Amino acid sequence: MASTIRVRAVAGGDTTEVQSLIQHPMDSGFVKDAKGELIPPHYIKVVLFEHAGKTVFTAQWGPAVSKDPYLKFSFKGGQKGDDLTVSWVDNAGKSDSLVAKIM
Amino acid sequence: MGGRILVALTALALTAATPVRAVERVDPQAEFKAFRGYFQQHFPKVPLEDFANGPYAMDQDMRKQWEDIEQFPPYEFALEDGKQLFATPFKNGKTYADCFPNGGVGIRQTYPYFDTKAGEVVTLELALNRCRAANGEKPLSYVGPEMAALTATMAYTSRGKPFDIKIPDDPRALAAYEDGEKYFYTRRGQLNFSCASCHVQSAGERIRAEVLAPALGILAAMPIYRSEWGSMGTISRRFTSCNSQVRATPLEPQDALYRDVEYFLSYMSNGLPIAGPGARP
Amino acid sequence: MGEAGEMMAGTTRRWLLKGALATSCALLGLVGSAARFGARAAADAVHWMEDAFKQKSEADAVKALYGKTAEASDKVKLEAPEIAENGAVVPISVTSALPKTTSIAILVLENPFTLAAAYTIADGTLPAVSNRLKMAKTSKVVALVEADGKLFSATKEVKVTVGGCGG
Image (cartoon, rainbow over all chains, first blue to last red; front, side):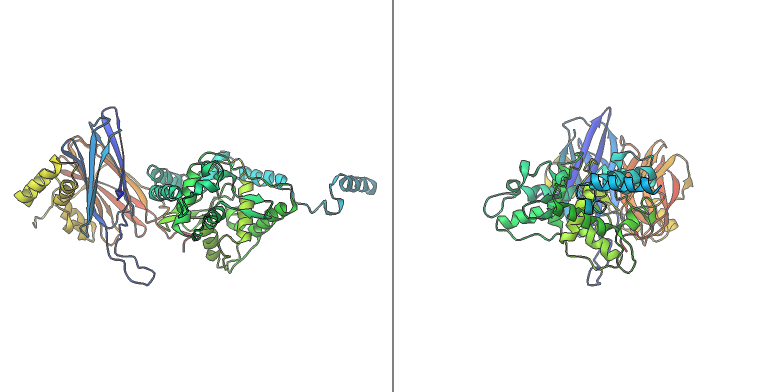
């Protein structure tokens, strides 16, 4: 099954820039469907980024984060070929993770 | 005075190919120049190729948001779906690549074209469903996600290539072009807007929160992922929804007249680069 | 847990607060980074700030997040559009020029829940983040930055209307 996570991690100079796009509905719970019923909230709560055994970035999200959520940040260190692990968990208990290579 | 006019009229009549229809015969090339000239005159600071980016060529604040989103666009997933769909064989083992020149890669900029055998305009969406029919598969909805994903991947392989729409020297092709043009300039619906009301007369202006794209290059970024739809949508989807939005009854997707409109608009954008798939509000 | 302020001063402290079991699960996650179970446990072990995400006012959200008040600072750079082209996807970035920045949070004051997102800036991570948020309507957006134990903020109003061609 294809991962929901897409990552572009590029090392340049002494920093690695990370961009991620995650396929997720991020339903806020405020939107009604075609029948007029509320679509229940379904959103990612936590996204974790790890490199070389260390957490480099943690995102705490609520329903106000856009669908197919995007994130960009940079951290010091990281070399081409290193692993970067991205994992998320949502309010329905679903989760996914991906090990990406830094380019 | 009278003599000079007479000479001029005679000269006009003699130089025309078919004297009786001389003044009525549509001249797409001349119209193309006039159309392009109108937009370049109204937006002198916009480089020609940038018209392919529609509203983002018109407004700095919108452009910044678009550039931010293009860093990792929401249509990534639809594009991946499209690549996969395109590569998946039909039940009979053939693939979409078998129906198209160059395996369907880098050809989007030549659509639509006028099929002189069938005497009609063939758009990319139509060609895709005809490919399916020829291989025993059911047609896809013209306004659904699969057609959008397929046209997205084909547009992507043509990114940067200039529109290259031909109008063969055939009265039926000229008629199709003209029918599309007439549709474009005709008012319709409760709001009594023509396509031109927004995309020619009000190009670059706001309609509530959005900035109207100029008609020049307007199909270059299709199909588009609209934030409003939360999904990718085809040219058919946009044409039918635009009609609904002026409170006019939409035609059926890929109606011959819609195809004529796409033909006219694409011809007018000749030379402009394919920018699809695009992200829009 | 019920502390007055859920401080975001590093993941380690959170694990200690959650207890030994959570800590060991999280450590497992870090060691076996390729294993899906391990990775899921890592994200799972992060204590989600449920209370902060429930708040409906700026004051309450700030209190739940940090337990202190913020002072406006021009060293907090908040980038957001003047007019959002679509309220469902508004690109917003925050960059902090303050040394020892440990966390960044973004509030959308007119949203049903004030807190939109909060980020932990680990040691060695640049104090900047770009994300895309939903805005229900025209609203002030507030960026909060915790640096060296103190709280700073920047505010910008973003206009949101219904898209003109979408009804």
